[in-house]
Length: 566
Image (cartoon, rainbow, N blue to C red; front, side):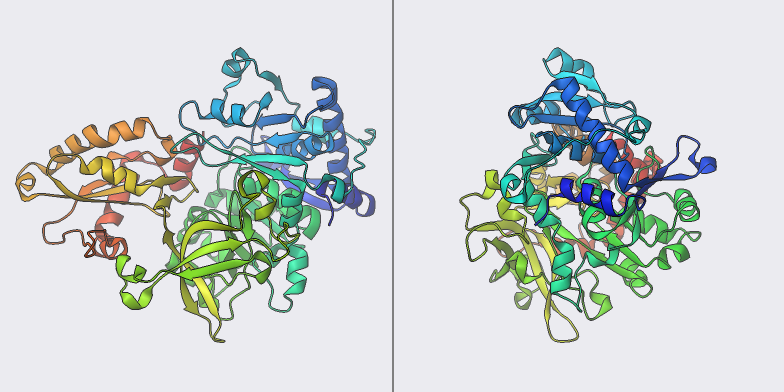
């Protein structure tokens, strides 16, 4: 196994002028064009940044934590690699916090250093300085790129010596509670870098990541979210992927920007959240260009099935499944392209699915449609595997034999008779919005149901821009003005919930609506909501409330994402 910081130096030695990142040339990028970051520039910039860290803060004595918040550019990657070289770990706050969430994250990760650049997602620097955090402005991107001739910062550790060293801290969303740090060590990161080797093991079938080996892709995801660092410091480093970054002030890839990126770069594929792909598909001016890409990879939540079914006829379409705390779970490609949304997990990731008897009825699909709960098992030799990230997470899983992912899956059959798996729900009732923010539907339902006269409540919104709340009331309340009734319910039950939740999962008034007397919320014999059945019953009404929200807010999904992430 190789350490990524040593592989970067090796790439700089053998292919110094090869491009790993393409990025906007400045504020006037539309006329000045795009610039290339080569391996030699990257290695030199990392060395320069490493020397700067030591000169500014002194040598790291105890695997010090360094946090950074700045514009969505390649400085995140420079700082991550430089932190590792200097014996530090790099903390990436993504901004999806409740009140006081950042303070809790810094404390739990023992972070005493905060770096920032102008134009970042948030500006907590004055408050942090008052609390005793060492706050320092980081250098410009041009400073990182102007590093030719910098003395090497020698990193001599081998994989065996460094595999347990903590190098990166990411965190849970922090949308419904304090964000929890997740510590990654070199072993975790190296296991994530093993996908090229895994693809060779499963040749000629191939796995879900091999579409972008040696290819260029538009990364339509902000750098402060994990995929940015993964694409540059995993796939560019080990698999020859060239990452094309949208301009720092652009979130997603709006259609106009998409056309310009295609004009200014050699683009093979796209990686983004589902809303980005849907927006590009629904735009007549970009649909054909989207279909002409070599591959499209979506992350974070489910892609609209109609859009996916159309795209899979023209391009390789897939997703990479995983979890923040346990890493990626790679999948074999399907034989039947219409199963693009399904997964067949490789054996090296030790995924086990256990049937839940009677679960089909609970989900409203009948007794013959039981779902399966997913577990990740420790490898047979008990130690962490070079191919599996999960059990390198010592802080969470050191003494654990199996990890309950809390995910529910349904089997689907491929054309060769093999079993693939479709994601259905979660056992803990977490619902994931379109940009990965999660909320606990049952908690909200319990709060709303306390309003006098309410019979049943269902909260949903998977893959949407905000939660919705469907409320069934007793007959005596139906005589009231419906909008006034909903206003009162919203004020007395939901406003308070919004105040203690992150804005990324706040419930808008426009997505709260009443169930029809002719379509009561369907329940199981155990009085559990048949969620899939109810969503089918109220499909038109659900679409209607989101249309109302879009009109009222006058925001596209991408603009809403920017608002929630800032």
